[in-house]
Image (cartoon, rainbow, N blue to C red; front, side, top):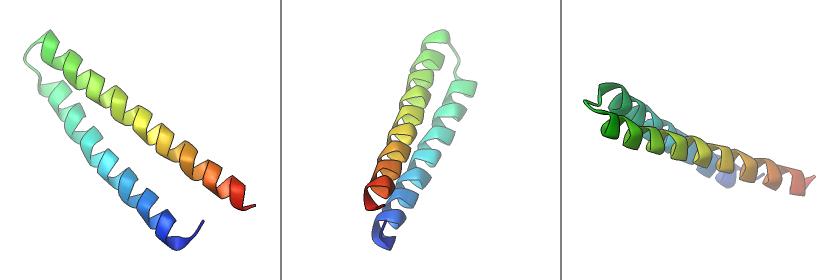
Length: 65
């Protein structure tokens, strides 16, 4: 994988990590069940996006070999 693509994956993971941290804070500080559920959906979505990014990165590395 070239350096530019590796840098982009790194930036993407950093940004997703920031979103995840904020969503977890919102979930912890939510005043009601509905707020916690919405924040939990964001957490789940970010975790899925991180997994997808990891899979794309792994596949791009595998294709180079």
